[in-house]
Length: 491
Image: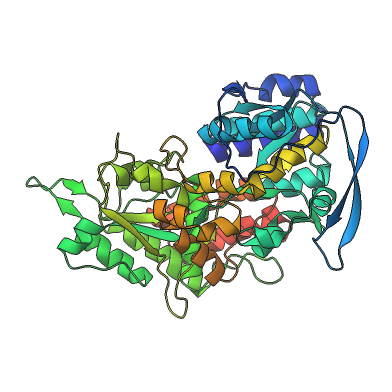
């Protein structure tokens, strides 16, 4: 079960439990599948830079901390009550070696508190979080979420406001890459409920330099260039079997939604109008879907494109030398440079994403976020969020410095590190990522609390029907928009 099929199943189960009075006990028997990998942090060493601030004085009783905030002008003084230190902070999240290698030792060093991670693929994480919330909460302090999840969880009171902690810390959204855009999707009714845990836009085009150079090719500038280059770089052996696809993508489930939003935008279209109505069945949306169909029919695209199970297969294919290019995101750099497995070391580069004029480039986002569980230890949970969001060294590590294929690079949240020479030397493409975020207006995808259902029952049904030729592009988009409106209560 992939990320979105599981999320769609459990959200509908939640709704049905509320409608039919299914008991929480029964719900937990259905939904409370275990999440793999319970890891207690703090056992691994981390050598801090000499300039790191010394750990604060241990607090054993409730005291008051007064800090000058700089979130809004004029500065305000905020009193924050510090509760006693717990033995551990409990975090449920997708698995990432960076957490145990660097986050846990750093938190232990700063505060003397262990980090306990319950990890797994996001569908399992989402089930675990939801089951705990419905049972009354209290099992976790920090939760992993997608921005659309934030809207529903904030409405139900499952996660708490970050604004008081932000004000007391003196940090601001200006410190976060793409800060204003991320702020807009981290808030509900003007209140902040989450921070980006990493920044991962579909904002770069990765291609095989050896293949392109041998044919005298340059990266695509327009969407038509993408198809032309894919035809030129698809290779076949003597028997006519494809030995290298010109392009490999993942047009299934959540990744189809991300790529669809980018492709519509690159053709000059949009998903929603200014009133929140889906409008991608217009001429720009039809051009975008026709482009996808033409690409699929061209014989240059990996035939598994519509069936990939959201596991990074397209990135694996590129690393193994099975395709010449694809739309990419920041986390893959050290993955492609892994000397143990990669076949393309020194043979690839990044460029801006193509787009039809007048756009020079287009960018879409699929970053993840952290939130604080309302029934958890919110103060010390915030200290974890503050550390991973604003700690310079940990953001360097998130970007890929020092290089480590075990945890790769998935886009640091802290804007300042994007100009760090060490990081740019280890991952030169990150400057392209920040440029894409900064250059492209409105790069954030339009999230709603109904995204799971939209991804599952709209995009993955109607778009695929048109791409496979089972119905016309226009009919597919008209049906998709009508279904979409119904889900949003706009029909």
